[in-house]
Each structure stands twice: as C-alpha cells, then as structure tokens.
Length: 218
Ligand code: MGP
Image 1 (tube, rainbow, N blue to C red):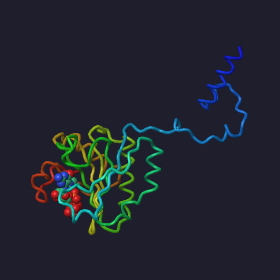
Image 2: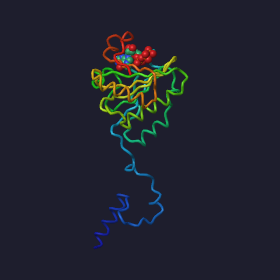
Image 3: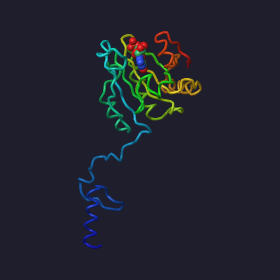
Image 4: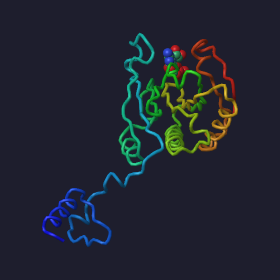
C-alpha cells in the first residue's frame, strides 16, 4: 500500500470514529466511547408532546390559544429521556391538558386527521395514583405500536381536573365502528381497566358540546 493510500485510510478512520471489522481497538478512549446515536431504537412514528397552560385558560378567548407543542421524539431513548424529566399527571395542577400525538397531527377537533374522528375516554377518581400508570401504559401502547389498528390512532390526552382526571385516546375514523371497538377493547386490556368505557364522535362534541352523547361503549 502506497504512502498516499495509507494516509487516506487513516483519515477515513479518524473521521468515522468506527473500528472496522477485525481491527484491534487499542486505546482506552475508543473502548469507553459513549453510545453513538446509531445505537438508538427508532419508533415507527415521531410523536409530539403538547401542553395546555391552565393559567391561560380563564383568560383565553378561543379554546386552544394556549396549547403548545413541547417536544417531538422518535426513538425509545428520547421518549424515556423526556418522560423521566417531566411531571406525571398526578403532579400537574388542575386544569392542565397534556397530550401526546403523532407528529403532524394537532390535538384539536379541527385538525384534518381528527375532524372525522372521536375518542375513547377513561375517567379516574381524583387522588388515585393509577392515573400515572394508565397514562404511561397508554403512551407505551401507542408509541410501541401495540394496537392492531395503529393507523387509526391520532394520540392521547390526559385532562387533569379538580374532581376527576380523564385520559382519552383519539382516533381517526369515528364511523368505522369495528375499528373503534377493536381499539377500545385492546386499550382496556392494556390498562387492565374493567369499567364501561364510552366513545364520542368529535363532530357531536363540536355541535352539541356538553349535550353530546356517546356513540359506542366497550
Ligand atoms: P375539555 O377540556 O376537553 O373537556 O373541553 P372537560 O374537561 O370536560 O371540560 P373543562 O371545562 O373541565 O375543561 C372543554 C371545552 O373546550 C369543550 O366543551 C369545548 O368548548 C372546548 N374544546 C375542547 N376541545 C378538545 C376542543 C377542540 O379540539 N377544539 C375546539 N374548538 N374546542 C375544544
């Protein structure tokens, strides 16, 4: 091998920082090198956490004007990094809404992917720490693509309220009853939840607000 070639080769090694197959790694620095991003575990989708500031709610003229995207992640490691550094729902103040939606979908009825959809809702009595477990299991089921009808999932929201907390799973095509029933049944299994669970169409909520009726139950 000529000198020029040798020089080129050592340059390649320096740049990539990777040992080639069969190469003896002889420096401590190389052995103790921290885990490279290449060793992370990508998720099927990117997901965005959103937060709605309860302090802004009483003052806001329009619903959603204080709703903000907080962080987008697309690897298992990044998820845990964020999750481990944010408050769990039981520690959030009443009025907070915390969402995790597929990147590109806004957690609003008005979003085109949500407009024809609806939501399954689990209601949790105040003071029950199970809200944190339910929230984590919901997140893991979504980002880990545990639902057979995964394409139907838009995201999930936890509403922290003074009297009771709610976790809702938003889906895309409310009229597809079979798909929604499948998702509802699976979600109950993942949470080990045994109460009756309702599904509401966003369109009904939009038109009738608090008078809107649930369409399906599991
Ligand atoms: P909520 O916070 O989802 O319900 O919606 P909750 O917890 O029963 O009510 P709260 O008063 O205790 O907060 C509350 C209200 O916000 C609804 O009745 C709507 O008027 C409005 N709203 C909620 N969402 C999810 C939307 C939405 O996606 N779009 C619009 N335009 N308004 C919404």
